[in-house]
Image (cartoon, rainbow, N blue to C red; front, side, top):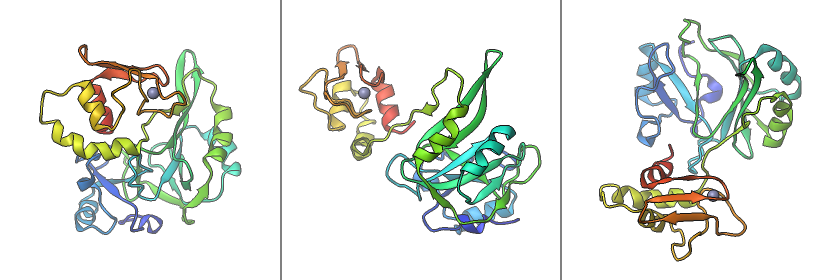
Length: 265
Ligand SMILES: [Zn+2]
């Protein structure tokens, strides 16, 4: 195989470039200028020269790229039990353990990590890769030297996130949270453009960042930008100390972490 699989050759999908036989990105992949369509000459040359590629999954910032999730199995027994319950879809066989990655379109993109505890260690059984993540795809080569291959060339099917959870969550027995956090906020996205200008002003304060985010700074605590609260008064901040804390969702930090959150990291 010398090209990106046909099912992934869709105009809305974007890829990033990785080092050869590696999962390490060559370029800063959060930057949209480093996102390539399958037919981009740069990515084509990169593949010809033996480089790896990864698909950008359902993103959190509104540039959906098709809102794809990937169910990424890391345990054969769990995979065998789950497969009959999941709709037939485009599937990749990983170059690592040879387990499967099932690609789906979905209604609500989420990131899940299903784990079980063995001798005090949390073992990963299956991940749902989604917003803020990527998945290595053919014609990439795994660090082990084995290629990622197409296991089922069906078109990418649709699945409700409800069904994904119903299928996978029963296997989650560790104390860790199965649902991984990511920030979904269009407010954040809108504010980003204005904020990036301000980053050069090193005199940033919490209040100023909040103002740029369109948050109500006339209240303290005020409405949190990281979660949808009913009371709209869970986010408290101290401008002189340069800290904030949301009692609703637990987000806390300083000017830098607030900026970093906004930058999607
Ligand atoms: Zn909150």
